[in-house]
View 1: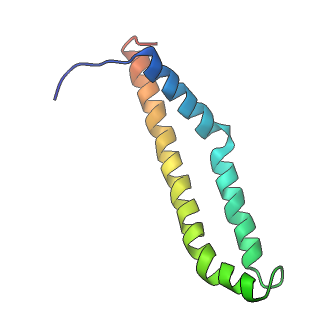
View 2 (view 1 turned 30 degrees about the horizontal axis):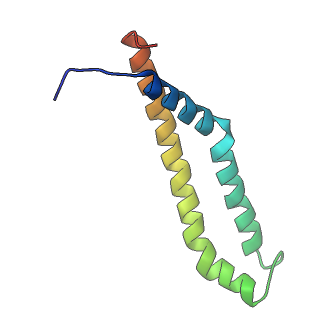
Length: 93
């Protein structure tokens, strides 16, 4: 493994943009989708053949994917914070 460390301005800008996007409410929006999907799955809110199909076929996989995305975005936030710290410590920013 090389000891070389490189951080171009483009890389620093990309990290800043990723951090801005992930800190800017993306996880809140995904959690909001999860909440609203659960509302639609409640038969007292929505019922009928299409509601059943949504609740039993569509929503379970979407709900799982949303939860995974939130977890992965949280991991990405931690990684970008570490990368930013490492670049700053190395004198790159």
